[in-house]
Image (tube, rainbow, N blue to C red; front, side):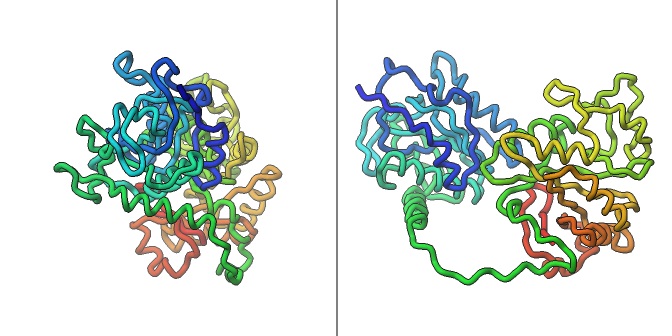
Length: 437
């Protein structure tokens, strides 16, 4: 009986394909025991989880992936339930290298004969309900993931299938409301998907076209070139429901620092204390509910950080993964982002409400105070009287700090024709867009 595990460099291959990858500890030895059957995969089988998912719930995605890899459905269907999982955001979770309980008995599909589906296929669970639309980012990531698996298995795209094609019990995944009809449902168009995988694999091997270098970006006078690494990355946000420590200093940093991009940004707020020095937070109210350590219980919801003297703020530290760390000032946040492993983050500070942000000399002092090797970016919405938001960025521009214009629909009255003023637009799930000025 053949039992062949997936290669140890699979996560690296996925990352080289441009995918964000999260590896679940122990994946190299995880799989159903050989006593339950062989594992000699020749194809890729795609499923949906059947549960509604939403953009941005990375902690839920990780928990669900771990459930599939580590817990399963008990004795009735022990784990792992798949080898790989794919989130709406296009993040690939690698959880098992051996046999998994995902396919059962399989009908012939494509160029793969009928037989033991758990032996014949590598299983990927797409985190979808089956009735919600498949985001383009997820679809594109699925194309790359399946392309990498074809490389690993040494087979053609005709070995790629969805569960509705192989199931003998009437399964209909992957459901896709924009797909093709199947027994009263709409499902993923596999022939079209196979063509997309084939085209992607061919594009990697195509000779590079000789092109002229792109023109330099249009930037304001004195503006530093925008760090090119962030353009290929993303800016991570905590959800509104998450606390400061859990959002910015735990889950967001964990996910961002584990990403495959060279750099990632992290969304932080920048406020000014009574002493007119820079304090970095995510909420203007540093309460115990936001995991600030306040042993004297002097801080409450009526306190705003801009009203606290430095002497009071100096008592505050953040409870980060059980450690009480001083991650409170902009300098400490920048240092933390620089030193976090496995590679640094870019602190993206949103300048909030202080008039100090209009002063070039204030930004010059801010710039000098940043730790060596950090790469802070200043952000602002173009809102407020007398172009307050734009003037904040202009002052930061003038001293050579990289800046980023934030955008929401309610900012239109403040900046008509905004499309002509920015070089790049990046999506900000659920809350508008970012535009690089």
